[in-house]
Amino acid sequence: MKLPEFLKGNALVMIVCECVWRSTVDIVVPFVSLYVLELGGNYQTIGYIMSGASLASMLLYPLGGYIADYQGRIKLIGYMTFMYAFAFLVTGLGDSWQWLALGMFLQNLTTFYWPAIQALMADSIPPRHRGLGFAAVESIPAAFGLIAPLAGAFFIGSLGMRTAMRGLYFSSFIIASALALFRLRFLKETLVNPKKLDASPRGIARLLIDSYRGVFTTLSSITKELWVVSLLVTALVFSASFANSFWIIRATKIIGLSLGEWATVIMLSGVVGVVLGIPAGQLVDRMSKKLVVGVSIMLGGVLSFLFLMASSYTEVLMLALAGAVIDSFLNPSLRSLFADLTPRSVRGRAMALVGGGGMHMMRNVMANSILSKTFLTIGAFLSGFMYDFDTSLPWLILAGAMLVIGVSFIIFVKDPAQPEV
Image (cartoon, rainbow, N blue to C red; front, top):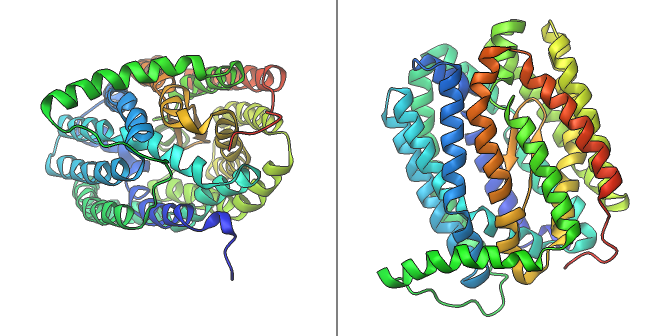
């Protein structure tokens, strides 16, 4: 079968990388909160660790956006993928939640290359195909990660939580290192006339100063429409951060699902996401993106409230499947909207500053900018206290906030008449 032109080149390389990535990372991530408890932490500890990781990911984010628009996207993506891989060793070496916290902090410190990935993908997919393109980049790799949660649950059940998680972290180090080489070899630069960075100590110091200054001087290039979208998405990320680490804990500790049942829920919802990903992306390209986002967020609010009512495996599964349908429309629409509203010349820096985020219902929330990461950090820090105070409170806040944010998207956001290329 012949691939569409917009799914060749960089888009194809990134899809291949993400396919391998999802089959490894998805085997670990769903169980991190339970792993913290296994290592002797409590609900507040989970919040501390997630907050620290979010803070780390934000510290160098301006540097990533600046380098992406100055030197180019590819070297930054490749070299920092190597550093990300190395951090897996730290998480695998220790046998305490403190070691886990250190490893996650270091790992997230390296993720300042994400604005370069966002800019590269926006550069590589034509505006008329962005909904479909971003849906493909998300849904095709998800197919390769479908069995990962079940495999993780199997290893944990067979080897025990500690042994299994440490082994999986070491395996992830090897695979992520190989992906770094693959990215450096096959990705093609999209920045015209990239400049060479000064790698001397003085040059690096100047680079740090210029990167922070450069990102914030980009404020003048950000349109009102992009600000509105970014602020609403940041509000979504903030409200979702309260429940982000506790879906699995409520499901297993309160509703009573086994680890295998929760893994099955994640896998089956992933199947729905894979099946709907491409068709949903095609529909997004033909519809008002702001309307798709607004309705999806409101439906997510209803789902979040219903999760509090769930009392069985079947009910949780039905909600997760509905959430996968919502995700299939929400995330491609958001990514397309940000790309459509951001000029190519400042795309790296603008994405670093206000690039927004997204969420996968009942799984995780994504923060892709300094603004959204700031509020994700605050929300994650508060989440453990909130859950300890009232195990229903995070979802009550999330449900109410999503209804308000969804309505606000429909009222205040405007689809661009002429999308940026």
